[in-house]
Length: 481
Image 1 (spheres, one colour):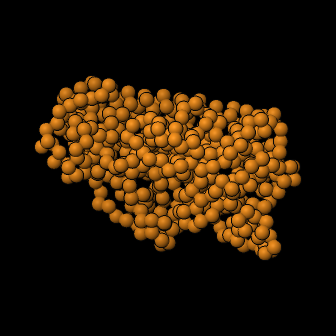
Image 2 (cartoon, helix red, strand yellow):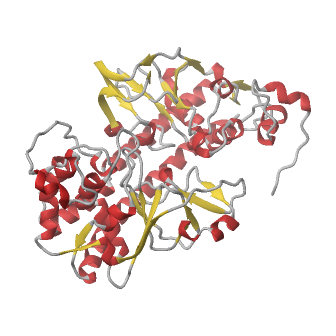
Image 3 (cartoon, one colour):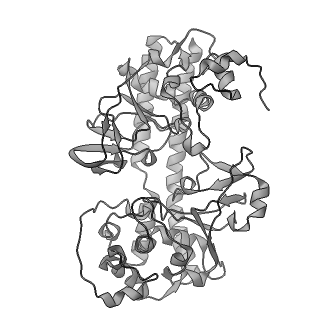
């Protein structure tokens, strides 16, 4: 149902940006910044949080060691930083914000998704994206309660009313307006009790999460066993530019010799060192010794998507870099095109069973997902569509194969470009080699991987249920008033 309201023109000046959009006007002028529509006494977030003066670390080589937290490496809505994805940085590609002195960090980008975290106590010298705003909690002893209060659905709706930006990937909440959001004034003893309950639930969540195994590890374990691979092969590949190499902790430079006569052996007459490194040859020779096909031989079509013309009407979802997660297509922060543009652009139409590859961007190139839905999707230019001939090859096997060290090695060898502008073309991918094994064997490997992934999904469901329990604890305190 469409919400209709009358707003006085004088309310437009409430924002320094002279906001005229309806959701903003309704929230600030009719609902008076009241996130929970609470009828009792309310207070602004500025009564609970104190912003810290922003200090920066400049890009380039660092003189001191800092722990670096990237927004893209953290799970939104969890509230607790995944310290496995916080790395020690020795150099920076862009300026970062110092987060060392804060209690809580709030990302103005993606705030509606819940990029809000308590600062890890074990990470004293912490830096992060300039999108993170550091705050001190005025009541640090009950930090968990206030953290999850900020992550409540009602709060995320408030952020949605305040955010600005043309597209979901650019929408931000102004930090000064964030602090104007009002929440209920609650009794200290109820907050303390709730904080202890939340602490106990978090302990259960941490225990469950410790039992989870990353999907990439599952894929590697199964492929390592079936193809008799060295378990440390991905690490030996080194950390490079493409997505699949980012889990490697091996960042040491290495040298090797090669003959100039080998240069014409590679598509595009490649001269880059990464194209000729012996470790990639060693990985692919394991396949060649047992017989291979090219991806061109097992597909009916490979092409890039098309440039979308975004529409406010939510008709056909666009799949671009941020929606390819390497762990299933993500429809968070999705943008749309009209059905008319979808119908008029056949090369952008994604079909069930299509393999989707992120074809551009440092640390993003090489992410691979599959369309396992009958819904219609539009592939943006940064999304490559690989359409498998299902009589020759199993699409799910190709999906996991491309995520394995075999696929990673080929993405790392075949990309072109430098810095953040690397890309890979359909012609490169057509020349990728795949094992020439029966579909029955492919399905056996797929079944084993999916069985292991399913057990991880059960853990995720339990964590999700506990996360809802935290929301209920907070609601119980609010309703008790």
